[in-house]
Amino acid sequence: MSPASSWRRNQFAATAASFIGFTGFTLVMPFLPIYITQLGVTDLGAAAVWSGLCLGVTPAITALLSPVWGRIADRFGRKIMVERSLLSFIVVMSAMALVREPWHILALRAIQGVFAGYGALTLAMAAESAPRERMAQAIGTVQTAQRLGPAIGPVIGGVVAGLVGLRHAFFVTAGFYAVAFVVVLAMYHEPPRERRDSRAGGRIRMRDVAGLPNFLLLMAVLFSIQLVDRSFGPILPLYVVNLGVTPASAPLVTGLLVSVLACAAAVGHHLCGRLMARITARAVIAAGAGAAAAGAAAVAVLPDLFVMGVSLGIIGAGVGAAMTASYAAAGSVVPEGAHGTAFGLLSAAALAGLALSPIISGFIGSLSIRTVFVCDAVVMVALGISIQRLMIGRAHPAIVEAAEDA
Image 1 (cartoon, helix red, strand yellow):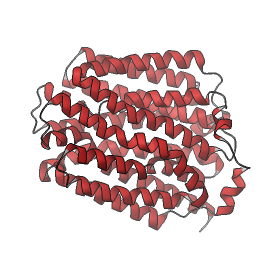
Image 2 (cartoon, helix red, strand yellow):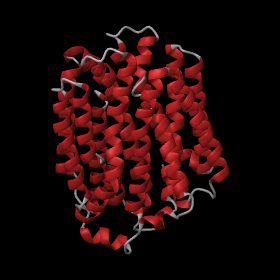
Image 3 (cartoon, helix red, strand yellow):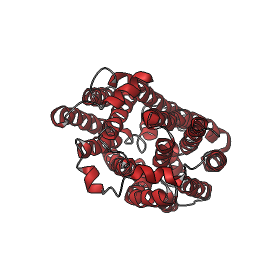
Image 4 (cartoon, one colour):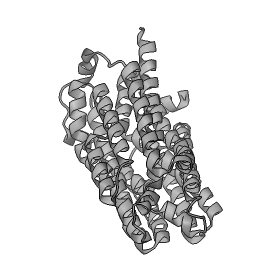
């Protein structure tokens, strides 16, 4: 197999596995608050708290272990690490269909966190396989797949839940992960060990990467973006019911709203490259944060289902553009051979935000659901101001060239 066809095949495998896995995950996770109420938690505040804990525990543990799994992947290969992660999801998702108490879900989600992290690893797989000049495009393609999966997953999940119930929908999710596992096993070809070593250029310490221009700031940006992006999970289904949607229709309506958010974020990922060909990453991040703040404020001020749909689209587009610009800006200052360490640190920051977001959102939502959107708006305004004042420099020319080629 020629090098060109080999990296494209690896690109397809990483992209397809991400798309299938993220689609399967969002078949059920957006409806976790409803599933918890079906387990006997009838108080909406308590359901929000349980949902926040269950949604947050997995990324919290994953964030702590991500550097460890990254080091192991650098030594033994990323393919086996992704296969390990996908297999664990098959087992855990199947077990979730058998739970009887909310703490059972919390325990399973904690176990899932130990073995999770395939999303970041598929990004690394794509970057590792691609030629240097196509690395940005490869990463962007996998990121788009990771957004498009959640765009259609909740809609499918809403239909599946209506047909077989939320409990049995977890078995369907396990089937999705089984397909993703087969795709990686059959199609991904690990690049030769010599190629990875030739790029290494010696051991790169984490503190060396953290000291690169803007790197710590961009880690904070990714943390803040995820803090807002994942704040809707514990409260969106409950808010939909409060707006007058019947409990029977809530899963489908929630699925449609989550899909709007995800589709808009995918558009933001795609448009970011074109924007960065014309303006700086700093401007893209600030503009994305401003758009997300406006959308969150609109939801808080105007409690209407149509307004929510439009506002979630604005939030998604802003978050997507800001996130891609942050990864691209951080990657542009990382020296050859340090991308594994760098993406590990960036992923840890993003996962920390993802972990804390549903927990904070759940507790705030137990007091006032609309206050969650007010807090989201405040965070994004603060982010936009901070990035304008503190970020230095322009996007690396290689990033601009890749954006123009796209």
